[in-house]
Image 1 (tube, rainbow, N blue to C red):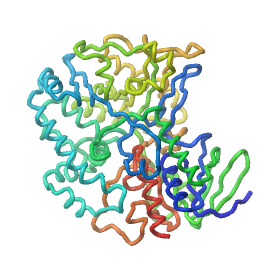
Image 2: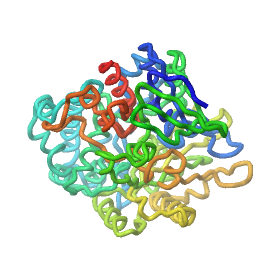
Image 3: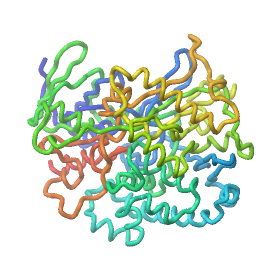
Image 4: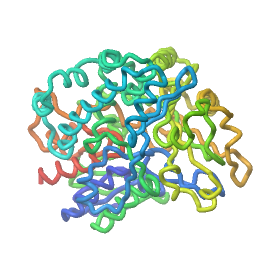
Length: 522
């Protein structure tokens, strides 16, 4: 079945595709979005993960930092983002932990003193004052054509800060500024979430990951979307449809051509359509496959690799901690770091690099229901139930195959629970709710599971290696697509997802910038 030509065909209905669709439809373009899943939203969805249990979990993506207020305002999105009072809690080797309380600096200072890191409190405050200055300089540029490296450096206006965060390995900066191993680890984790690298690696992959974690909306705060991630993509879906975009679900694109022809399968039927422009809200590696293997620049692509395990749990109540001086509500009220001291992170990376599951898996835990109980039914909330999301680091995709995925999922789940239990006063398994079939409310997703469910190559949550939010001084800037960081080797095809420059995270930047490049070039 052949369809009429559209101004724009968007491959993939994740949040970036919806952002692009809304902007372009508002500008009067005819837009068709093709999404292979039964619903739009991609990784930013809410789901009833456990049969018979009324709890809407943010199944994959879970927090929002990089979505600019500008996009929310321009698209008229009705969403609410809640700020968490507590930044983080990190148990230490002696039992006492570090609690960073954004509402009480003196309590935070006392917590630094309690773990023997009094001297690092002032260093911490100074360091994050520096990252805030960097954020105020860089973040306002992300919805504009890319600056060059030289322009970005001049805009920051602090050569020492630029060198520390952009030009030398993140590990050097952290070890130069902080003395305590636990404090160093808390800072370092923002350079490793979803990125399999060493802190001293000359690739500076950790630096780029760190930068994206600290610049969001000029504060770097990671907020909880009220109603779950599905509330964000639900608002984007409404904006796109109301602007006139056509969204087709259950429509799996099977091939595309550089001249805009797209073939897709829907309801068992093979269909074709054509776009004056194609926006790829899929990873560059996936686009290469749709184009038949590509050629030119795409031939140099290497399949990305993810390095994380995602575990969702539903508990009858929050667990008690080994550190009885901190309440569970405070500890789980922000990011709960587990086995993420600087040395533990390095050890886990070395073990993973050699093909082993780390002996102590570094983990980050988030309790959305503390900030937003609306994701639970009134009965569950009143009974004291809570969700936990665990994001485990340094569990790379290279160890997984189709043949061993089930076995590895079980091993990784056990390793994550063991890591979690190492800092609790009681086993987490005893607090798990059960679904209607009597199964524990526990869901684990490996990188291979993410590849299957979300078409993320290698389970990489960023669609590939993150890029600097600027062009190198010698990079081409001749076309709108190049200036906006969304170009491919094919003039009619633009990247609009996380694989674009300044992509990654729930930001909408890939979609916004592809739409702007397309409108500028019209």
